[in-house]
Length: 457
Image 1: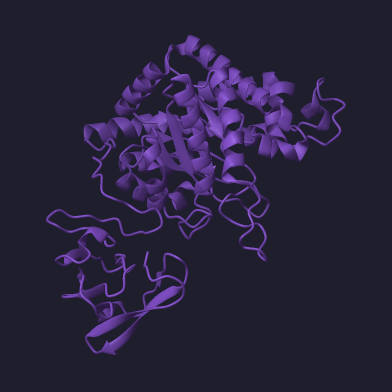
Image 2: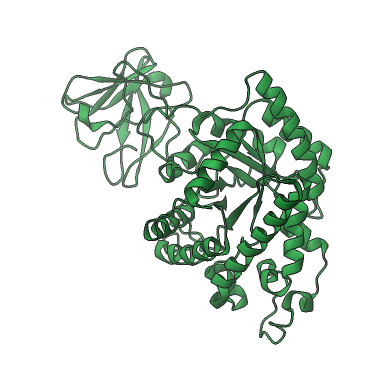
């Protein structure tokens, strides 16, 4: 089947009902309780390093076990399974000295999932999809691993692009329908994967649907690299992903607010596959299949998601409960016209590092629009919690508030000024440095600038 028909078939199906993604591969592999010999198999019996824990190696050494896990999830009700290739990049496999077989791991992983999909589809006639999983690697491109050297990077963008390109080629050659860039904690890593996939698609003339899933690392509501859900979407929207969402780190209860925010912003389908709750003191997950299905059922009833599934701690029993509940909620939601519809894109300029993303008609523009410099003042609406970002890259650029809700960018000289209620807020300069607000009179506050550069971002 061509990639174009896969995309159209996937989109057609997801518009009709909520699709179900599989659960955790690692949880199921751990339940096998394999020894070091169990991981090695005959081919890697004499390997010079310990390989226990390298779950992706089982694609070659225990292919029967991996295929059976995929089939169990399909039979539980999953429409999509992700391949057992989360760590199958040359970067991650270097820990085991197996970077040379990265392509083979990915091709074999996709082939096993494809075989399980064919068998499940033959049993009940339902269309099944294989999503080639691309994990985040064990390196980060935008954060230094050395607190004493913040400018150091353990990996470069080009190294990530090369590794992801090799992985994506193996997954496509093995028969993956979709590519799933998942568990994103550093958006720059994800961009390297997106770029690698785009190069392959251009080279081969393909149109592979891409699913993107980030990870909120804690209750701050941000990725490890510091981005909010909206900022993540602004960063990857150009890739035109077929789904955007979150997985891992949090349970469904903790993830709901972030999924709701993404559902409001994203003009594509939304996917959520949380953990089975938060881990207990022993590292296990306690949420039962029925309890987790009830939480995700509320996601569906609220019209927040188009694809649901499970991550760490989930099993085929969880997916069976989620699938049954999701289909029931989908029918009820559809009857009330609450099945999530993709919002229309407004095509406004949005910045990935700034939470202010509201745009109105009638002449209001985002702060920082330099086309207004030296012309008539432009007005910008600011909420109570979101300040716009005036572009003060040229001296004499003034900001002044008339009623506390609007900011005017003027082209005449003078000190930038803002309404007094915003005293205490701080901004980052484009080139480093800080800016803050100080009070000049009871009804007005001025913006001071310091450090390198004079642009506020």
